[in-house]
Length: 374
Image 1 (cartoon, rainbow, N blue to C red):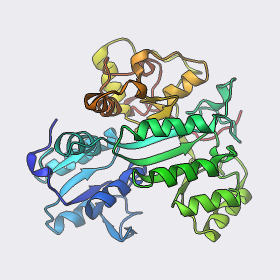
Image 2: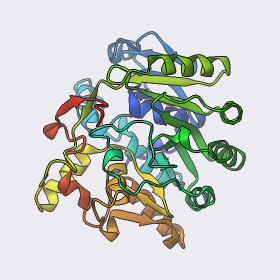
Image 3: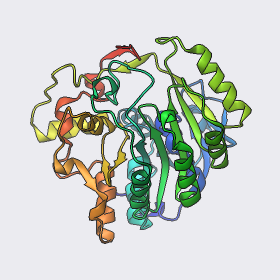
């Protein structure tokens, strides 16, 4: 689908959505365009400000009769309900509003001839301080845990960003990334070489470890955000959690914390999931999942972090066209192929791992307690 031509020269937009996906990508829009409003119907956000932009409900927004284009920052399942709400009030998709994936692909790629990616993940280690059942990184099931070589990690970043004009959110994970002893050097490498190509650097931790002084210096220098997955209702480490938050505050490092009481049960590998072989159904399943979590590893982009984890754990063998090899990029058309893959347009229309995983597909969701330990 293509945006109308009047999108090309826009200078301002409104953002609809301030949830998990939005918070990982909104800085890109704020750095490139004038974001006039942030819309979210979650009353926990209403009245607050993000980078001095007010967060308001959709009802408050339409009462002001604004005319900006709207970009929706959400997963696809949430987008379907937002689409209905916008259309109800006369807004037209691709003319007045669009989903973030369309904006990345069409506004950057077709209208402005740039390759821009949203949230992209890198894993530093598959070792963790916890051993959570149903972990989507498959930590308990991984019998060949690794810590990755710093120079190879740097090479991956160089390879990606030599072929991409901008990366909105670079997310560092594990296992537990604070176990990685060379993390300060890695942050320094990212910040000193790519501060104008990366909108936001984020580290996801479970909150059990305190960063070293060296790491905190690097994080503060390059405005790195700590995102804490809080499992203290399942595992007793409140004292460590509070110590971490106090330490981050004292060192003026930005952080955000999410209580993780409930997880989705993807099924794999404990349950035998069979999604069949129908191409159209599998394509729909993958798009309904839309986790927005591609991962960079060994010169390749993997569309799905869970699929990468399954292969890295030795539990599943991905097919060749489930990944995009960055080393094959030779010309501008290849860069466009990278963007297309990132947006979920692969040769089969889906990745093979979708056959054995429930993912985030709303029709198949099963909620389970989060962070139950083996």
